[in-house]
Image (cartoon, rainbow, N blue to C red; front, side, top):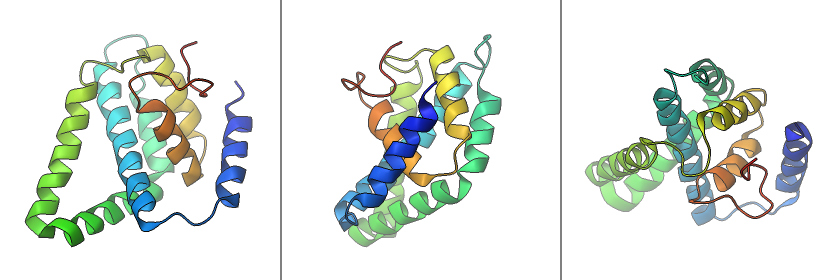
Length: 152
């Protein structure tokens, strides 16, 4: 796989970009949170077959725990600022339930074997920029043209 080269290029590109605006940073935090939920939900869905990737998901979560927690805290803080404490809780619940519902029946264009491979790749990095790139490519209804994880 050329994942490491792709991720190195993504990290370099991310480092060269200007500091994101508050709105885009909030969007990135939400996307990272959604990526984590998607991987968790699909790992649970795939746990009974030969492509069980719960061990890879646990490793991914452990290796990215700081970035995942920071994104979740920033997302929550932004929602509290916009909606108040109760409104933020409802908004976070909507995000989580929406992701669970969306991916509970599987990923729209990736199977368990592909998700297992991707999660393994993601678990090998501790670079937070990798999470943003993965979220951008994996959370859409179809693979992006030329995206790293287009159907193989």
